[in-house]
Image 1 (cartoon, helix red, strand yellow):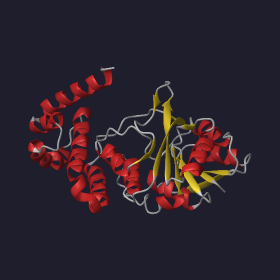
Image 2 (tube, one colour; image 1 turned 180 degrees about the vertical axis):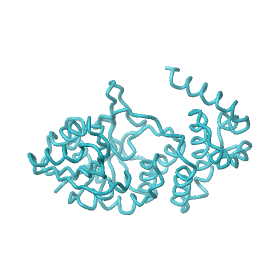
Image 3 (cartoon, helix red, strand yellow; image 1 turned 135 degrees about the vertical axis):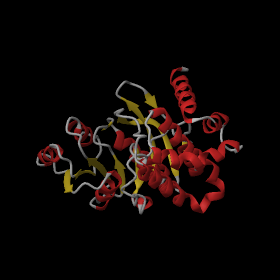
Image 4 (spheres, one colour; image 1 turned 120 degrees about the vertical axis):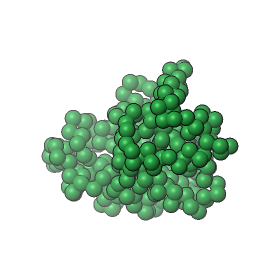
Length: 305
């Protein structure tokens, strides 16, 4: 088996059929689709089973809810493909996606080939790099939280490079894809950027910045631990990563005393030359003012073009 397509499934009843159809209609021989019903309370599991009864390439597994990284890991463990790609249940593979990714992988022998993606509104997103790219550049991009490339979906991975990369605390309820990719990139893989779009991304809700402090802390503690072998290189970028999450929390308008206390030590970074001036201003100002600054700046970024 050449490729395994792994799809974690949870509360996506309106779109799971279209997702599966986009995968099963690929013009590529030698692939399987692994749908992991992660304890979904709706009809997702039934829909998957009904489609699997009509197409032997689709294999469905049902498990208790364990979160997205655990579902991806479960799917990988129950797959047999030499390479793996991941699709979210509310997204789709574009026509020819597997063929394009596999042809590049076979030609350049990368550890991961990253494709471009499109949104349902017709917006096309491709990385600013082409061909092989230094993993450190991608880690920096992720820590700045302005990543311009597919992070877990829209990518073809060699199976071996993913070992251990989905061992992520259940408490990380957002940003788990970034943590996963940083895990991969810290192994110094050969990464190849493909400019062609291979994935259709459904724009859902934004990050849930109202997460409890234990969710935020689990995210930051895990990234901190993963970066330790190159800590001197990434310490300032890690602090910026935390700052960007604080700014997202401010923009959301949510109020949480525990999160306020957790983020309070970041104010000591306001004098750091490694933190961009706009972010240092947010750290220097009272929370109510910082919220205005963040909302104004992000509104400008969204509308400047």
